Amino acid sequence: MLGRLVGMLSGNKPTPDTPPPPAAKAAASPAPQAAPAAKPGSVMRREAMLGRDQKVAAYAFMLRRAPDELRDASLPEVQRLYDETLLNNLTNMDVARLLAQRQAFIPISVASLSHPLIADWPAAGTVWHLKVGGNTTIDEALLARLTEMKAAGHSFALDADALLSPARHPLLAFVDYVLLNVSSEDIPTITNQMAAISKLASGKQFVATEVQTLEAFHMCHKLQFARFMGPFITRHENLNSPVLGPSRAKVLDLMNRVRTGAEQSELVENFRHDPALSVRLLRYVNSPGIGLLHKVGGIEQALMIMGQDKLYRWLTLILFTGGQAQDLDQAVLENALVRARVAEQLASKALFAKARDEVFVTGLFSLLDVVMRMPMEQVLKQVSLPVEITEAIVSQNGPYAPYLGLAIACEQDDLGSIETLSAQIGRDVAEINAIHMDALLWTQELAVDV
Image (tube, rainbow, N blue to C red):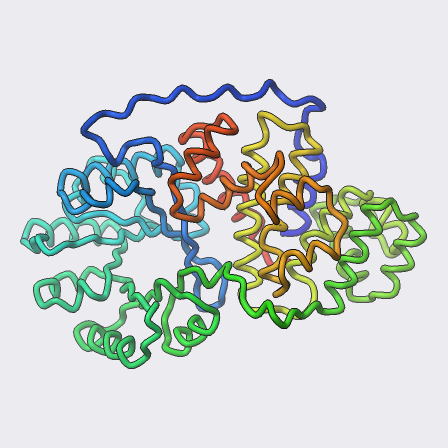
């Protein structure tokens, strides 16, 4: 992953010396009066879902809704419109490209299972999260449709609360994943629900939702949940007792030396004092992605081949994988890479190449405090960064802040900030959704252990 990423960030793609003209503000298309779910604000939101190996296994996709839309969400016509908007957005984003690497959990009402867009939907990698309400009828027509889709290879998920109702038991035969809200962290209740469903039908994979903390994740892991989702992945924990391992401390020191223009001999000497880091450098330089005809065996030659710009980007990523491995490091790195790529691409119409690189670093560094288990202010004190990056991360100010803000908003249910920030940088909903999906795919291409 590291080799391909550094190469892609270091000049192997065209980067104009001057930025294109600033993007004009997209003309807002008037929303139909009777289409609340199709209003501006249908920017897709994603939520990562981890497997038992603590790596991202799937993404759940959903639309944001304004408060007035939430009040009407139970109305069948509103739900159908919501489903259609969601399906159209995912189709326009070409979600099928993602399904080779990650599953996509897509919420949908049972009434929409016969929608024309689903007829040609790729079955492999798709998990339809069935939404059933108090008025949902489990009839022969629905069961026949589920049988048809199951035979075509589709997978289904359902909330545990819905399955516990006897009226919904006929759905158990079709369900592959059972989603269970664990935010209460009430172990007896959680285990009782899991046991009750397993008694009705064995072989179901349980998904823990609303996992709030790393401690709750470990609890659910012991309870044999198969998947995990919630704010625990990027939550800042244990910041009162920060630990900076020796390897990461060395990386930060080297980054500062590169940023301040240290002499080659000085960098060579520092690498020689860290054999583990030297091995990683030589392994990277000699990797197939670099394409050297002859192997490099010396640190000085390796640094000459790298150049300072590429070396700095390589060191930035090493921060996420250096030192003693921590829980969720790979998941946090993937999330940080998506943020970085979204922010960089959002800036492509307005900023110079150097500034776009700095926007990328801004997105990547925005989760460095999580992976290093340190307050962000303390992390940033140890690395020399342009003030624009620091301002965007710490105080959400400066020229890079809107791009970082929008990248973060793609993970959160904040409709207001999406509308404000997208207008500020002159990007419309369709562009943001396309950039978001491209960033997910770009990150998947790099998803090989460093």
